[in-house]
Length: 384
Image (cartoon, rainbow, N blue to C red; front, side, top):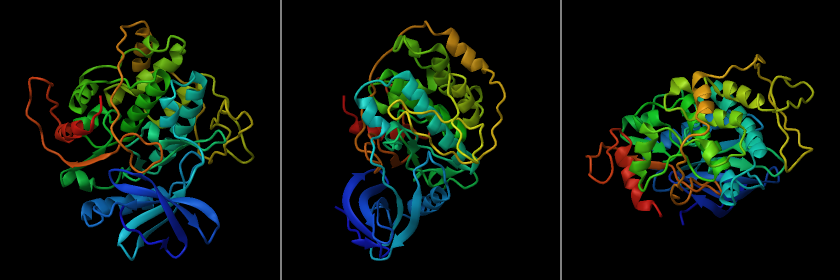
């Protein structure tokens, strides 16, 4: 167990560890000044002395703290523990479960997935508008607040679209295998489009119970993500509306240019599936908020932001996705990869490893990308 000051900042009474991941540990805590329960995320003690990682953590913690939206886990405070010299952030602690917990119990109903997707994509739209790309969208980072609200958590490895990717330039990358977009596997920078691909993987998994790209090794999974299209969702869930399947497959397009042009565009597609807007006084009425099936009286507040309510037109990629609705079934379960990055319920840790290009092997096709060696190292952690 790593060391930590009992009362951080003279006000946060730190309790038990909730999770430990690739970059940080998360502990329960009580804010004695405001009398509320919070979660404290501290940079791992063994990484606190690595300048690149420390700078990334501190910069992005402040960027996440600047985001304010009902579908983003709120960050209340950012500071450094003087006793251990470890940066930390303080965030809201939610009483509900994560999407990973729910998927572990079986596929979700389509209406619940649409409800969740609309709220998650709205949170991502706010982050993208602020120049922040999440880079680790996965079920463990989608939290249910218990009142019908879904929130995106853990912007701790997020990247400002205007900042220099310090860790990449020094030979480190951060990602969660199985959810990272194909262009990132090829070494391209993270963009809003790569977040939408990851969300497409999340939606596919929530509806089918398995990820769309499966192989025996992490490198094999990466190869499939770069070279193959996802099996038609209808083969796993014949009851899923073709329009919803088309939205998922459009998000999963390997070519970023064929995905939705923005999170707002993806949200417009979800509205077209039957999402009804719920308007609070003084809130932009063009922003939809669906009521969760487990909380029919919930109305989530939405921050004002101009959104065009034009009739949504499907992209060519979306039309192709509908056309292949009766395609060949390919179903498998992608392996679980250990504990998450400190978020309760998270099942796959982001990886922070040196990157080199691996040599081809007869058993598994080589992936010619800067992430291949990093993924290969993760194979040791794969459970069948």
